[in-house]
Amino acid sequence: QSALTQPASVSGSPGQSITISCTGTSSDIGAYNFVSWYQQHPGKAPKLMISDVSYRHSGVSNRFSGSKSDNTASLTISGLQAEDEADYYCISYTSRNDVVFGGGTKVTVL
Amino acid sequence: QVHLAESGGGLVKPGGSLTLSCEVSGFNVRDYYMSWIRQAPGKGLQWVSYISITGLTMYYSDSVEGRFIISRDNAKNSLYLQVKNLRPEDSGVYYCARQFRLTTFDYWGHGTLVTVTS
Image (cartoon, rainbow over all chains, first blue to last red):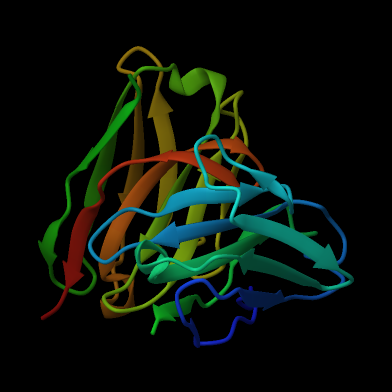
């Protein structure tokens, strides 16, 4: 299974908006609306942020939003805050009945 | 309150075996898909395996197929991962997670570290 493609790093200043892309294929992201996003701070377990492309998990700030177009999913963080600095991972269901993660994106708040 | 606690990791030589455990409280493992996800040191997340609600269907990533076995014990409310013929590239933190939906892992444990080295 090939990992989904994410940029290695994205940065922004406090208050700005950033978007993280997650590119797959017609056998995963393009075929299903089962894409989720996770946030991971150093030394911590991942935390669910967005499920099923665009649904914010309970307790997640509305500054986080998800979308999808064709084979690419995106996570947008608006009003960037220092606490948003973390690694972010996308994941998609695939036609093989399994799931595949993206390589991860390190978000830096300048 | 939901809590997942992994155990069983450790230092093992290539070709060795371990059994990882995940004790669950706050929900019944038999009511959810459950997964193992790992993370090599300094690397990204990799899904390893999941077991269906019925417990009759298991899926594995290509890299562990034939070497790892996922199982659960409803009476002990626990999830397991037997890892065999270990390779250095199997090293990392192994997390168990509740799989609420296909890609929705809503509760995670703290992880258990497996180190494969000669």
